[in-house]
Image (cartoon, rainbow, N blue to C red; front, side, top):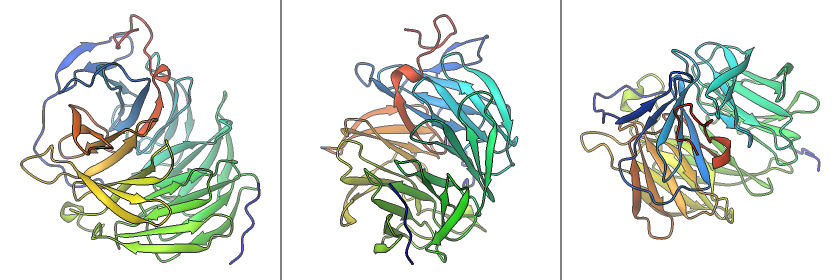
Length: 365
C-alpha cells in the first residue's frame, strides 16, 4: 500500500469518595471542590475532561471546578481552544455544544448523531473541529455560526488524531475494526490501516511522522509510518482481554494514550489494570509503569492520562475512585491526589483558558 499524505464504560462500583463542595454559582451552576492533597502553587496549565454531563477542570494548586454542559449528557473527550471555548460532543443528546469555560455557559449548539461515545478534536489551525462517535465523523467550522462543513466517510469510533498540517485525520474505535485515514480537504476516505484490529486510543509523534495505536482486545501496540501507512512494529503487552459483552470483567486493557510534550520520547498509556504504562517511543520498549491504587476495596481502572507541558508531571484518573493521582515522572512518586477526575479523557490547556469570570463562583483570579 502506498499513500502520499502531502506536506464502556465498565460496570459501576459502589465505592465512592464524597467530594467536599466549597462553592456553587447560581449563575453558571459551576461547582468548586477541594483537592485531597496540596499541590503547591497554581500551575500555568489545567486539565479538562468530561464526567457525565459536566466537565472537570483540574488545575494543580487550585480548587477543582465542575462545569455542566447538559443534564444527562455524556462526552468522551473534549477539545478546548486557547481562548477557553470547549467543543463538547454530547453523544447522549446528539449535539455539539460550544461551552465557554470562563462563564460556564453554552453559547451555541449544532446537531450531531447520538452515540454512547463521542469526542472532538480541534484542527491545528483552529479553523475546524472534528466530531467523532460510533458510526460517524463530522467536520464543523470552529467559529460562529459553527456550521457543519462535511459528513466524512468511514465508521467513526472513539479515538481520533489530526496531523500537524491539518490534512489528514485518523479515526478508530472499539465499535469497529481498523483505523480510517480521512482527507479533511477532499472529505474522502484514503485507506484503512490494520483492518482486523480494534483500537481504543491513537497518538501521533511530535511532527506527525509516527502513528501509535493501542488495542485493549489483543494488548498490542502498533507503530505506523504516516507517510505511507507502513506498519513498522507491533509489541504485545498484558493489557488485553476487553470483552464488549461483559465489561464488568474487564480488568486489563488500554484506554487513553499520550506523549510527553517536552521531548516526545515517551509514550504514556492509561490501563484498566491500574497502571500508567510507559514506552520508549522510537522502539516501543516498555519502561517501568506507574501504579494507581486509589480504590483500596476493588479494581483501579485508569481511564485517562495527561502529561504536564514541561514533561515533569503525569496525571492519571481512576474511574472506580473518581479521583486523580499526580506522579513525578523522574521519581515515580505520588505528588498529590485529587478528589475529582474524568471518567473519559483529559485535555491539557493553558490555565488562562479555564479562568472563570470574576464573581461567578469559580476560583476567581
